[in-house]
Length: 295
Image (cartoon, rainbow, N blue to C red):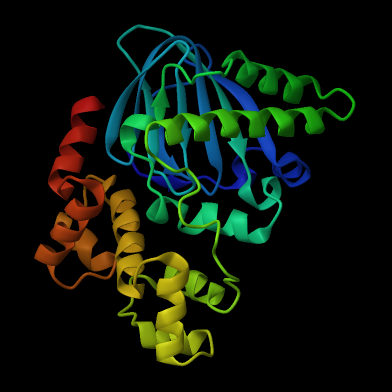
């Protein structure tokens, strides 16, 4: 079961360019399961219509029953399987942050480091019931997208933000602020090139000084701005990216923990294991066991 990146062209490139959302129904009657482990830059909402399945997101396993809603961020590694001979049918709603949000800063935050700044606890990604929200509206989003009546995208966008509104209030009442520290952030344009630089070269021996040079900034100014904007150091963010990439590589069962660590830029296996456990709350071997047991 190799992890793969699912880009816009794997769905319908023309439609994903036209609308900030895409929806379809997936079912065990029409498709073969398990759905291979994959990731993408989309925000994704899964809404179970029938049956029972098993979903793994970033190493956490969820039983997925009729009426359940599962929410994933961009870069979340996830896979889906059926249970024995039980049927499974669910709505998939994919949301493109670049087109959905009003500013490029909001979209950028969702795609690159929203999870790190404000990680949603795993137990809150699957919801049996969101107070003051009718989950049937997720099926309505799908039906509108399928039929596309006049100006349907206005209504769909409103329904999507209604979901976000209910979901964020639900989390806030549980003591978790969905907005995190990003509301008062200043302009990120000066250090924005550093994020693409990190994502493209995370396996190299990167330093804050090399990232500062890439942004044409002094080391001291870059380091202060990076910490001020993200709330963490350059090294902490680099390790976060490396661990996320390692998780995807570990889905290839032929790879060893040591090999994966080296491939994502860690020269010390013990340090790699410590970082993986710090970010994922389990060791790389435990992660592999979890995936192997469920599939």
